[in-house]
Length: 169
Image (cartoon, rainbow, N blue to C red; front, side, top):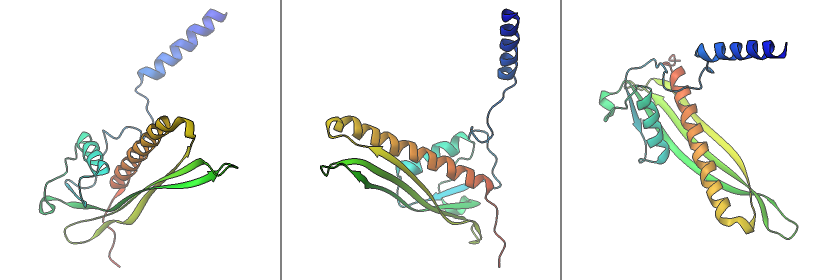
């Protein structure tokens, strides 16, 4: 009886795996946009902008070189990282930091019609700290910032997927 149940369970799991099931929105490679070309306007080539370009290229939306060639302009207004002391020990040593990552953006077309109104992607993480593990905590902090940047890129792509011209008021 037990072996029959194990066989049926295995077959049902195999069937589920074979059907191609995946969470909606988890794969940013096969996304559809309501525009054909995009120009990314930013202050410089930051790691966020570079990762956004790579992600858009993987989803077959190669950013163009000039704004004249683009149907949509994505302006990265600002990108800020922050680190605040969250809590102290009884002896006055830092126990936790709050790391923050914020990207401000907007999207519009060549006629200055807004597709995405000015908006922020803001992420926060808590980093526990220990003076005895300085190098490990520095690496953990760098990894948290890298993960927040990847999350901000994914949120930006999802917002671009939903972008449509806003009606004039």
